[in-house]
Length: 253
Image 1 (cartoon, one colour):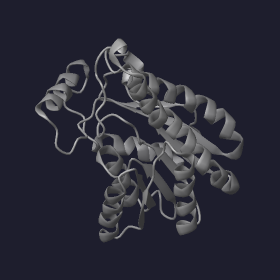
Image 2 (cartoon, helix red, strand yellow; image 1 turned 180 degrees about the vertical axis):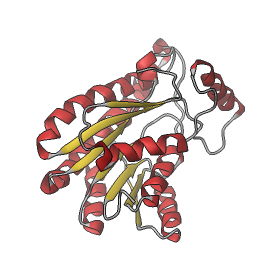
Image 3 (spheres, helix red, strand yellow; image 1 turned 90 degrees about the horizontal axis):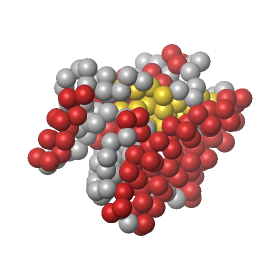
């Protein structure tokens, strides 16, 4: 119960890995704010957590809009009186299909959309939550990156570039917020079977990813929960600006 009395916001919490993070925080006593652009999904995850005895709030949030991010933070603080953890998990990749072609075939609109959610969205959510964390002189921000930023696979270069930006953003923000006792770290998953109804193509892709791993199996959302809970907790109280890789040994970082 490391999170007893604490409040955690998880963006993209209505589906897949984000929902797994929400369940993990709730199991350890946190009051959880499930933020997702899919409002009904966010409310459903919150309702499921409430039925299991947790306190949870579902909030429709478009992280690519500063006003929406600020409303998310306002509602969290209004409901629970504090914000201890922000998990910046929302991203365009699994639940919203993107072009996997070469860099010359990606159009401007899709490039801008990926950057707006995957990079600007994290910036907006941090801007929205930081004032509350500064006020209480404590907090932990966990930015979800991707192993693709470490090994640079061919295809979907906009996604890979956006996750590389997350790693750099994390380091600079850690220095800017450290004086307020706010920690900022990134969690870097490998290829994870997070889709609710994966196609045969996705299953083959996830299986193929096991070839480069030290642990030869498909990664699933629950494989990331422990690492996320560690980064947000007092167990990692002197860690900031770091990248924690949880990918079964694909990237020996």
